[in-house]
Image 1 (cartoon, protein in one colour):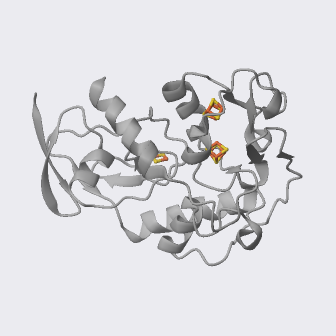
Image 2 (cartoon, helix red, strand yellow):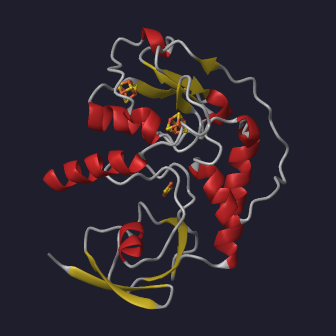
Image 3 (cartoon, protein in one colour):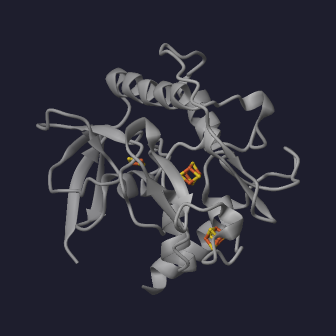
Length: 235
Ligand code: SF4
Ligand code: SF4
Ligand code: FES
């Protein structure tokens, strides 16, 4: 296994040749914000929150998709990157209806956490206020499109871990929505095994357990992560 040596935020680090900048940064205790990434699932580069600067490359690169190379020089937290990340978060907030005060995931939301970490205390863009639906047709779980950030973690965990492939994405641009089976209500999606993995993987309040209060809604992502890491190690 070839080893690569690179520099991240002024620190010299070693990496395996197939690793991404995000993986190496995490192993080195350097935190890069992410939303669509989930250890053990495939990488799609959907959110762009993990962008980093790579010396000699004009545009910021997603750390989750960028493989390490010998002599690479990476910066993860410049003022320009932090401003770019804030812009991404503000656009996500403006695109749907994220009203934390009345969200079941209030206090257990990775979008909320990222906003707090990056100091997003207001939105500079016009709110679009789309008319989004809530699907409560499943006996155990609910889907609130208002809170969905289209990270596709539900799609990937259902397909790659549960093997049910209930979720998919439909539509384009601002009209993109997650759908179940052939876009029928979740409760009528025959492929769903009701395992709940998608609910736990969801970083926001878009997928939730029905009847759970805010205090009860905490998602045990560490348990899901243990399953995912175990599977990754076996593969
Ligand atoms: S409950 Fe399980 S099977 Fe059903 S959509 Fe979610 S991950 Fe897929
Ligand atoms: S429902 Fe949740 S996990 Fe699925 S795409 Fe939307 S935010 Fe991501
Ligand atoms: S975590 Fe890299 S693009 Fe979302």
